[in-house]
Length: 309
Image (cartoon, rainbow, N blue to C red; front, side):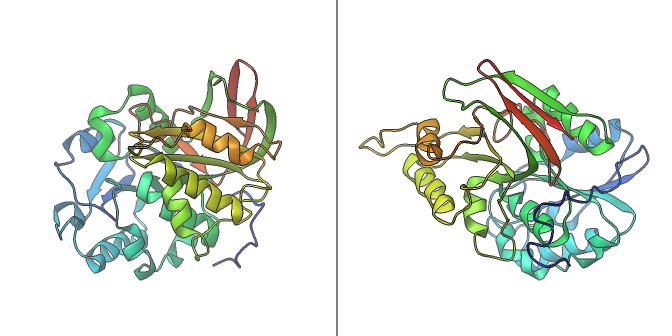
């Protein structure tokens, strides 16, 4: 394990990219599955991969995919299995924080493998980058595949197999123009706030931060953004990417600001580029992004471009 902060400006280690015939595993570190994983298995097999199913796919303990020990043991077994080249979280929900400290990730330094997921899986992304300098993939999960866009699934395949990915899309009216380079970090805003001050927290300095969330109240988003800012995490960013903020709720007395207005109100005192509506998050077109890797971000008046360096 690296000393905390030692790699704060170092690009993460990229696990070996997949090739046909490789084994990939599906596990549930958080909420239990509502349906079988047939669509995900078929998709991964169509990419030439051999699919290994974790025991948690068939477990149930209240809302979780087995109790905390069972979920930790399932993940541990897959981390320690050198034949497994990628671990894909079947879904998010809630629960990773309950079991993450029961898992010994140290073998992943000798045998790096891709970890894939988003939402609650943000905790694995931040923990693996902060402690083991490992790149991970923020992308579609098996439970989302039936509703996922073809482009989002293709972006996941490209990320896993080491093909080039880059994104261009139209600018939002509230974007702040500029150019930046830095290591891409982030994920679900609620989870970034939840790991703050813990061994899974991140060094945000000179990073390009990505955030997204779902089902939150506007006042809660405001609180979490301001919490990160008061902790000094937004002050020295290289750039800020805001993805999908979906199913957002308001109180009976309106909060009075949109998500975009909340974010810009907090970061208006800084000068780095900011873009909204990036195609990632709890949306059908959830494009894969590789966390822990250096990117260039260009926000222009009519266009946003994200490239990996």
